[in-house]
Image 1 (cartoon, rainbow, N blue to C red):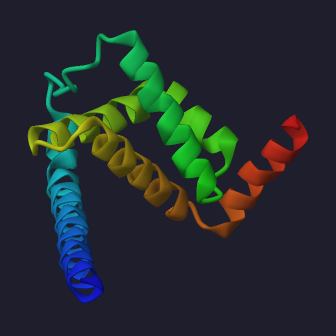
Image 2 (image 1 turned 135 degrees about the horizontal axis):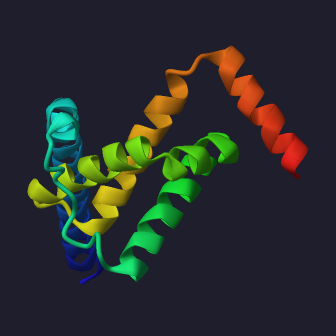
Length: 141
């Protein structure tokens, strides 16, 4: 009887592992597809924005998640908040979320992918500029 229970538990574990791995692959594929189309979409005269753009609560939740996910990866708070306040950068981030949405990614996946984009922007700054932003963070404490 115990053997049968362990066998069933093993099959459930394998199924859950395969499901999580498949979800991870889909998230990666959707993110890469959105990144490829981001430049063209952001230069478009009629921006493609997510369907939840006019929902203040969703927008607040989205921005809160981006800030906190980026902060967990040691991105400067001043950098993230400045990027969100800049209309051009905010449009880029929202366009990215919209492209993820068009790939049928859920709201949480849109948040995660957009935070990953913010982290990539941070990484492209270089050490010297990152240090300047971190110094500003320290001054603001």
